[in-house]
Amino acid sequence: MSALILDGKKLSAEIVAGVAVEVSARVQQSLTVPALAVIQVGEDPASSVYVRNKRQACERAGIRSLMYALPAAVTQSELLALVGTLNHNTLVHGILVQLPLPAHIDAATVLERIHPNKDVDGFHPCNIGRLAVRMPDLRSCTPYGVMRLLALAHADMKGLHAVVVGASNHVGRPMGLELLLAGCTVTTCHRFTRDLAEQVAKADILVVAVGRPGLVRGEWIKPGATVIDVGINRLADGRLCGDVEFDVASARAAWITPVPGGVGPMTVAILMENTLRAARKADMALTEEELAE
Ligand code: NAP
Image (cartoon, rainbow, N blue to C red):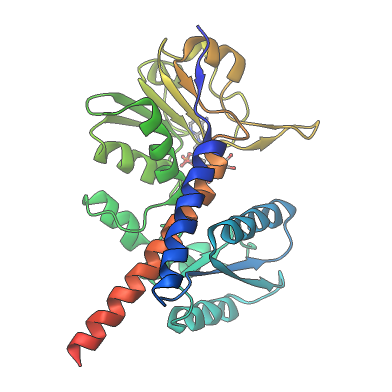
């Protein structure tokens, strides 16, 4: 058996094209053009690639992108002040702080300063909390992008056993909440999990987000499973790979994501959808203000 590919590149292009249609409809109605502010601190080369990809996606979606490139030595209070200014700017709908931040800045404090209505990465405790209580609003981009890919393979996920490997705040934890919301029975694995192979072998749906090439061996995969590899690792020869041993896994799985071309483009596409959603939330807030007058 050779697994079918879950093509994130294709689906993400469709999603971004859909956002572009909605944005031009807003322009026709004289509504504001959605705007995304991206803050990059320092010049980490990988971050620069991610920021460039986001800017290019904005261009395709018709979203205005505003770039704030700050020096690596910027202080936490200067960064918080910029976030505060952007929170109050009614022409900015989404704010994204590119991670990782330099060691002298506490990322959690900065992310929490972003207004939840402008938190287009979906990292704010309010937005993660909304997902936890089944009231999702701005959803974390990577986990929700994974759900959109999974929908291509599973019309209904209820009752399936989903195993998430990795429990970070930005990927593994919201991923488990998304799968729970979809009715899966969810197991989350992390560095203290005792027998990773045993847990992986139970998965109808497997999502791996750790950042270690080859961590999940292909022979562990349940035959017929759907395998989503979130990991992005650069090998010594410059090639990118995920966390799952792709060749062996794809001989056992029914569906699998490639790296690159799987989850990565989906993350950016959901960011575009979230920015559009944030712009709509701003319209509604204005309407409520007008009604209150
Ligand atoms: P992270 O913050 O470093 O978290 C990694 C998680 O893996 C942690 O929860 C850690 O457990 C867990 N872990 C470490 N060793 C493990 C082991 N041996 N077995 C099971 N779990 C283990 O990383 P992240 O931000 O979640 O990202 C994970 C990977 O996804 C990276 O390769 C990253 O580049 C990639 N990523 C891709 C996208 C995309 O769009 N495709 C988006 C985001 C991230 P503890 O919690 O116990 O430390």
